[in-house]
Structures are given as structure tokens and as C-alpha cells.
Amino acid sequence: MLNGVYQNAAAMTGLESWNNSIAQNISQSSTPGYKKAVLSFEGVEAGKVGIKNDFGNILQHATIQTKGVGAVDFSSGSIVTTNGEYDFALEGKGFFELRTDDGQLVYTRDGQFKVNDEGELVSKQGFHVLDDTRHPIKLRRGLGAFSAASDGTISQGGAPLAKLSIRDIENPDQMVRSHGGFVVGPNDVGYNRNVDAPLLRHGALEQSNVSATTEMINMINVSRSFQINQKVIQQHDEVLGKAIQSLGGH
Image (tube, rainbow, N blue to C red; front, side, top):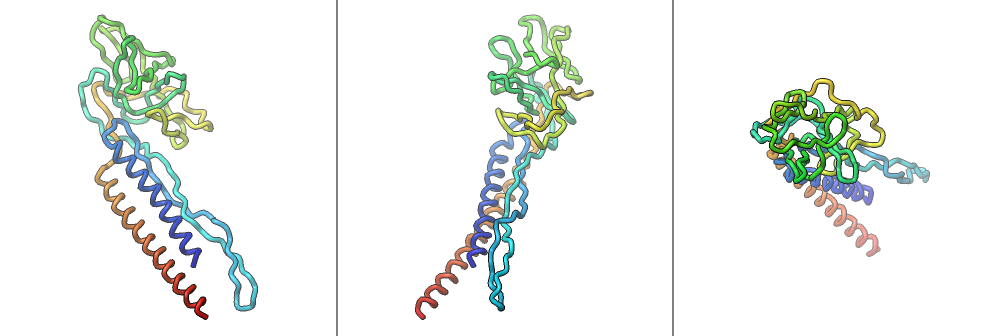
């Protein structure tokens, strides 16, 4: 009886984690380059329970509980033309490489950049956008129009200025969401190479790969499943209460 209650409670915990992922996806669905959070479930052993059989022997059997495993869907989003002077979108593989104020390397598909007071190209968080030698990109004030080629080469006034650092991540499933982008996990050593043939679009942005409609449907399904598990626990509780009253009466 109690084992069933524990299993339903574990299912409700997993559903709560799924609901949090859905809420995060919906809130970030309009953020350029956002990659949606996904949650899968697997059964894990949660200890053993002893049951006495008809011969008085105690048999041990494992109990299984649900565990949610979080991950990120790195599939590409649609690309929309913005004509923004400092907007960039990547087609195919690759991530823009940024550096935070504390020196941390951050990788993102959000190419909505701007220029700070020092004339440096930065992300919306203020992180430096790096060139292919991992140095900040600084524009030359008053020296002509800003443009970018499909291979990531940035020019100003017709003269090459720098080349964007577009990095290939060998194991994106080991990346951790942080700093408005992703940082590479400690076990991944294959992130420090440039993409051989990047395909950059200037004046465009990659949209998030979240379907708000799908996420809303998922949220409804989670709510219904949560209610069902809650009702089952209530039924277990009522049956257990009746059993206690019956046994207590004798």
C-alpha cells in the first residue's frame, strides 16, 4: 500500500520537474538562439522491500521510482532577417564564442550583439565577442560601414577588421546552460577548434527552437497527470484509513 503511495509521489516529483522545464521554455520562446530544455524519465531502483510468502519466508524485491533526466535540444531554430547592423545568425553547426568579465568562455547561438562605449562588440549581457584568436573585437570609429561575410570575416569601411570566433563543440550534450549561454563541461576537450566552413548571415537572427503551442499542450498534459497521481494517493490514503479503523475496532 505505502509502496504505491511512494511511487505516485515520485511520479509527481518528476512531473514538477517537467513543468519547470516547460515554464522555462515558454518564458524564453522569444529569445534569439535559445535552445529548449527537455526532460526524459527513467526508472531507478529505490531500495528493496521484504514481503512474507505463504511459507513464512521473506522475499526481497526491488522498488522502482521515476527519475527525470534533463537535457538540451540543440536543433536549429528558424532564421529571420532583421537588417540589424550587429545581428548575426549561424546556419548549421557552430557557436559564437564570448568571454565574461571574469574570463569565463561562453558559447551561444544568440547573435544579437551591440557596441559598448569603448567601441567593442559585446553581447546583450555585456560579454566580449571574440575573434578567431580569442581577442575582443573593437570597431574603428568613423571609418566606414560595418559588414560581415558568410565565413565570419568582419570588415569596416571595406577593410577586414577581424574574424568571428565560431567554435565547433564536439559533445554539445556535455554543455551546461549558464551566463546567458552555455559553458563546456569538464569532460569535453574538443571545443577549442574553429568551425572549418561556418555559414554566417549578417542582419539576421536565429529564433529559439521552442514551439510555444507544443509547450502549452505539454503543460496541460502535465497538469492532468499530476491530478491523476494526486487522486490515486488520496484513494490509497482513504483505503489505508479504513483499514486502520477496521483493524483498530477489533
